[in-house]
Length: 601
Image (tube, rainbow, N blue to C red; front, top):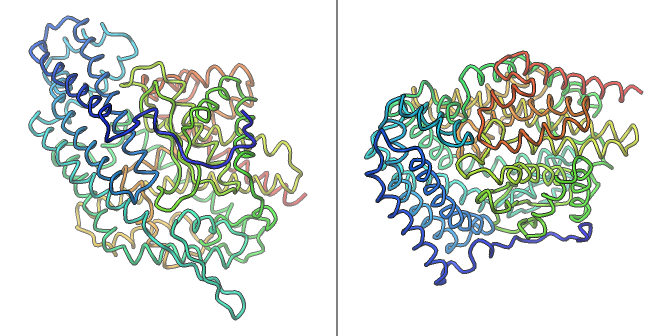
């Protein structure tokens, strides 16, 4: 295939479901129902002395059901993301979510039996008897046992999720995808007005070479979100209250963030070490913003200017989609031929939706339906350097999934702390390739972009998480209003930027624009974790070269079958120590020094 000639387009979902209204799909759903009933009939087999082979067989049976459900649900969601304005697609998502909740309720007895229905001796006997790939998964279930409720209570929670938090998130997405924006740019005595029905196009202007366009883009963005903050803020308040009620009041977790930490298989102390180290190193990026202001010939950096390019010429460079694809594939191929072959599979099976369309979900993501199905990648490709990096990022996710495709579905997904490892590593490979062909001036520009990205994916994400900690406490314990939550976000920015960046008032509404706060509370520290981890892994790659590649690919191929601390310690990485996280910031400081030296040359 001539990848350089590729054009943007939409994905082909026929490999999942050909016709959701047809008889084949009805029969497929009926086959799921039959499998669920068959599994339910095995409930009497669950006794303390159950033979290990029979127990393992039940694990395989439940995996088969989950894979079938994932195909139907995955199709519904991917179809909806391609056109969020489609009522038919939205209805199918709701139908599949209800079906998923019903099946989860009916199979719940197996999970609860293993968590609470047998003693430690029998649990250990079964864990040691099944294939080793399941051991971490089963040990983690036993760890979660003390936070599990009775079967009737778990059923109620699963049922209410569809019309509760799940519905609130869906409303948030539907509102945000339907927003229209009006950007007003003053040029002399004239005011030029640009209208957007997709926030992706608008947000691309925050990296414009024009300070007026950057400011206008942010103002247009937050004007709409502030206008809708009453509804969006109340959605958030209710999500926070629900998270606290279930997690702390009902399940007995120590704190709201502990719910996420334990789900990730991480100790609270590990995450505390990460966040406290980030907080201590806020000054490193403040130093960078002062240097960047000097390079931009500004007295002081404004928050509008955070992602300003250092060169007008650089910001105007455009990439054809095929050129971007070819560049990323060549980068992957130079690292390891297998990596390129896996990435090519995503294109050859038409699992990429890359064009910008009205009502299409914004941003980018990689979605793995089941381990045996090639992942699907959604992009909104607009031809900028940022979009090329995003392409590499999302295909890193796809690579991670495909390397783990031989694992059972229950253990194939990497835990959240490792979820960004392959994606960020792919971006670093791409940047290294691009920089090797650049002049000194071009290297300076790309290096600044890299540090911008390090800020966005390390420090910004850490402070997002610190904001969530404060917001959840304020809403959950003090019934904080939307305005008070905005003030908390404002204080968070002041600590983050110090006196290095001037922050305008409208930025206090930025929090209602961040979808992760709604979709996956406390997700954002995974970006900080992943990026600091990748800095260390990439240094090892530069030091070791070829011998490092199989080590790295083995980390990805482990999926979610190993505890992060244990998996990484084999590569000499101890994530429980603040010293490890500090190494990453030391590398960031080195890059800032390189930038200063290039500027002085």
